[in-house]
Length: 312
Image (cartoon, rainbow, N blue to C red):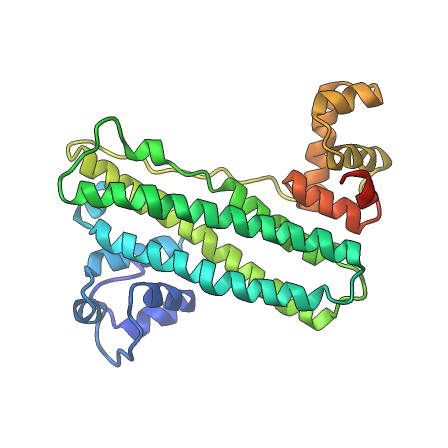
C-alpha cells in the first residue's frame, strides 16, 4: 500500500515524515488543516492532490520512481510552483542563515583561515545562484510554453538537463571542512549547530534535484511528445569514505592539486604514472570526503599542508 494517499488526513501525512512540512510551505499550504484530508487541503489551496502526493513521495523516498500513468496525470504547473518557491528559500533564507553562522563560527580563526573558508562559501553561493538563474530564466519559461502548446523549434527539455553534481559536491565539501578541519579555536557548540543545519540543507537540496529529475523533466518530455515513454534517472552512489590519515604521498599529491597542477603535471613532477596520481586522488577523496579542487585546497590550508601565499 502506498505511504501517502489523497484520502488520508494531512496531519497524518506530516506524522509519517515531518520533513514534508517544507513541501507544504513551498506549495503554499501554511494554514492549520485540522482534520481535513490531503485532497480537501489541496483543493482549498488550488493544488492537484495527485501531484502533491507525487512531490511528497519523491521527497520522502529516494527509491521512489513514479509511473508513466502518474506522470501523465500530474500537473507540471504545481511542480514548477514547488521548485520556484524552493529557489526563493535557498537564496533568500538558507544562504543568509548559512553566511551568518559561518561568519560567527570562524571569527576566532586567523585571517588566512577566515579568508579561505569565506571564499569557498562565497564561490558556492555564486554557483548556486547561477544554477537557479538558469532554471528560472530558461527551463521554467520553456516548460510554461509547452503547457500552452507552444514548442520552440530546435529546443528540448534534454537540452536544458542540469548537472547538480557541482552544487552537491561543493556543499558536501563545506560540510566536511566544518566537520573535520576547523581550528580548535572555533566554538564547539556553534560548530555542531551549523553542521546540523548544513546536513538538513544538503538533504533538502538532494530532494530538490530528485523532484526535478523524476517529475519536472519526464513530465516535460511527455508534453513534448505525449505518445512517448519516459526514462527515470538513477543517480550513481559515490563510494563510501575510507577512514584513516592521508599518507605522505597523498599529502604530496594534495599539495600539488592545491597548487593547480593537472594529473599529468603532477605525474611528471613526482616521477610517477598518471594512473598512480589518479589512484592517489581517489584515496584522498575517500579519506577526506572532499571532491572539488577548491574544497581540497581549503582542506590543505586549514591542515597546514600548504601556505596560502604559494597559491595566490
